[in-house]
Length: 509
Picture 1: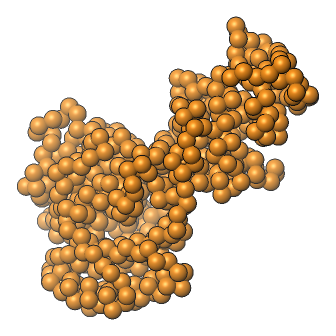
Picture 2: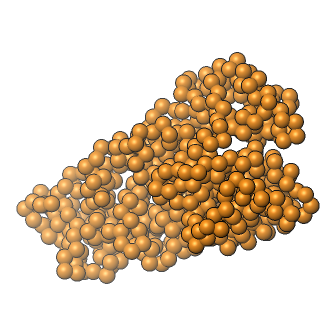
Picture 3: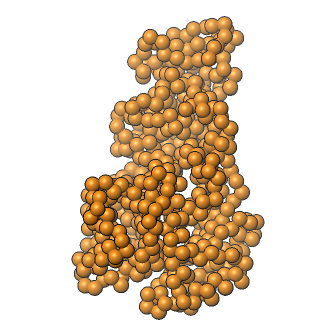
């Protein structure tokens, strides 16, 4: 695989930066502007601003967008339009979802948007569901199960498998409408929600309870639930994207939050007052979904409708890019590391320190790029900053174990072999040891010839009959200096091998 990356061009293999794109998402709770940069396969958020207008708060009662909410939304949207004009951003997509779709005066609101110079598209319920599902597919290419996108006005459910979608539905079960199902206690509320889900045709537990895959939870309220769960268990990571719990743990979490009535949720640093208020109702909804859909596990996704809009516009070749490698490559390039050189170094170290039982070649290549980018940081802050990148930056296509292995490789690349305790909460000692060998091999590769491509072409690192062998072309024999000797000893000791240096007329690959 490493040699494949070497052959392919940067654009095809790693993704490339594109002009900024803006998405204005007019939802039932919030009106949000997000400006994306970087590669659109794994976009970087350049600006994210929202207005909590609650456009859909009275839809169930009156069928209309109320004047106060419309005024607040339009005030925010006028600001968004002006910001985008001043920033010179031309690629703007404006979409509206359940509140505008369902309101009898939705057309009037859309006309006001056009007066601001925006070109809104009111999504149907099926379109909204499919876009959210495409966002999940973009984040989890192997996704298999059901996407549940919980917004203010509606709940979208759609099956995903093998990169495709099926059975998209929209249900009037958004967070603003959940209180309508409180007809007494929580048990009665759950019964009402359960009935609504069954009526919509979602009763997988009755047909295939043994294997219904994963429930992918999309939306701000679900993410707040994930943050609560992560904090409750002392999880070492901070990003709720990709946080995973099995069905039993999800049921216990939902029961605890449903019984809380919001007590103990308000005032939490990472959970807004609005989300805290809605979590108990959302928890009852999750109980009903778990009962009817019978998933094996629950995964929380920060990618949804907006990312689905981006993903839909990508050519097939870009969709096929590995999201982890595409994101890390752009990030590393912006910090002075060329992905092609990182791929060459990963290839050079392949024989001595390959991905074995715990990692993968894609993960090892990502670790190589990130470790090299970390070397551009000032030495006194290098290690904590680079480890922070590995653990807490929103990478796509990686789990907690993979993040810990990235961090371990980065630490070993800097010859820091005493790993932080938080890594051991995410990965086994064997997995961390494998990643540390990647880092030590990279240390040898980059220090051998000061990261020159010529030094990699004039040398080779192999394992022969239980010995770590550094082959050097006669022209480059002088590269074997004291630092190289130390690095060889360090890597060989970690591998449990002897070592030697062979000077040869030329390197034959």
